[in-house]
Image (cartoon, one colour):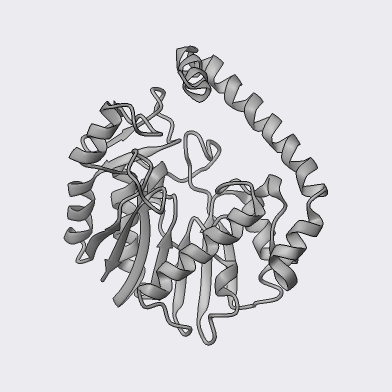
Length: 293
């Protein structure tokens, strides 16, 4: 048995309190390691990002993906390419739900000429970094912290995701992005966010959204043990998670339900890429859906 499989097996054999302590210990160890790596990799960051290096966060703040400068840049460029392929224009007004630490943002800063960008995120350190490092240089890029509750990611949040109203007017945006947002929400919350997306997106507006989509193929691969995620715990009729304690560390949604949810709100949704998360050969880890209102 591979070492990572052994570690996962030991972790899942622990009681809930033990799992929580193990997660905390791993998080502290990883962050301490990445503080040191950040100090000694300044020259590397400068060589990779050039004039944009001051807007790139230290490794220990990269909680929205892999803590690696090369992958940080590549992740952003991949997202940017997909947006361009789907018709993103320099004059578009963009809403990035779960904007993170700027991974998807930096490739857009010199592209949006006449357009603008609004990023919302529940993690204070992400919003603080982007507001202090990006907005002063690009005033059409703004970031807001949202106080949305999550059992694992933001347990002190005061607003349930199913009740959160986006702080924007109806029909305000041309393009919406959600990367690794619905992969951490159960179906009731996801449905409400789709309602809000339909409200703030213009007629003809577009978007790119990532998911872990449950369908016969992905569920078969999980059953065969080929998936990196074992989503077997069902918390409602349409979503399953890896964590038996109901934590939103990774959540999959039934594909037919997702497509029907968008359709009911007058949004056309198409699965354009299927991810490698469940054991497929693919170029991207998560599944990607394109939407058009």
